[in-house]
Length: 287
Ligand code: GLU
Image (cartoon, rainbow, N blue to C red; front, top):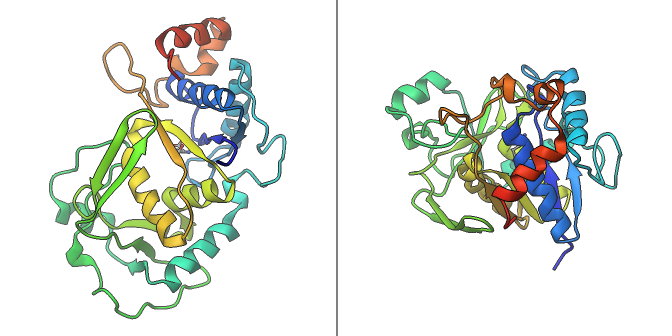
């Protein structure tokens, strides 16, 4: 067995809230328990929502909480760079592999076309997107246009319709989803020449030798998509541990707009990190 490598992968699109922090704390606890290495990756690909001050704040807030990592944008490490915006050539190479094996195709349908054709929205997590209609696809085996040097069209991965995909989550146990039913063809590269979260995440977790991905359970469906990327790239998938999501007092899942529950606000109000961690130790004795 490879030595345990876990990662924290925050997106600098707002201040981290208690829900993110608890997931990261669980990731850190697991890395400690398995005497592994913890990596911090800055998921800063979303140029429209990314802010440099949030990137600095998220590292500072996590350190304030008492988390530390052995590799990351601020400390370096053998798999540097740890900022996704600096790793674009790696994602592009993966896209070329997917193109060469015919796993993807260009799609000029708009988001609105897909939403209209898909009908009712799918129930699911925050990673949910309307089911891409199979009728929008080019026929299997049709010749692909070459990849432009600057991409101006969305490229989607063709999912194996009807195949039951499975993995055993280290918290939730056996999970399964049916490709083409629970989720459809999904973007790996966007027409603004930016890799999708699914591609960048799978490529990085593989390249950085991550052995277990710990993240919120709103991303279970993304895990199935990423399993298809690992398979198409011929990479071994890590294990997955999806954590419960934190809710506010009204039962609404925490989001970055819950500013009062951001680590920053808690810290400004004089909350002590040890008290926060202690409350989680009571709730999560089995991490
Ligand atoms: N940056 C992503 C997020 O914050 C990471 C998700 C993941 O852990 O894969 O949602």
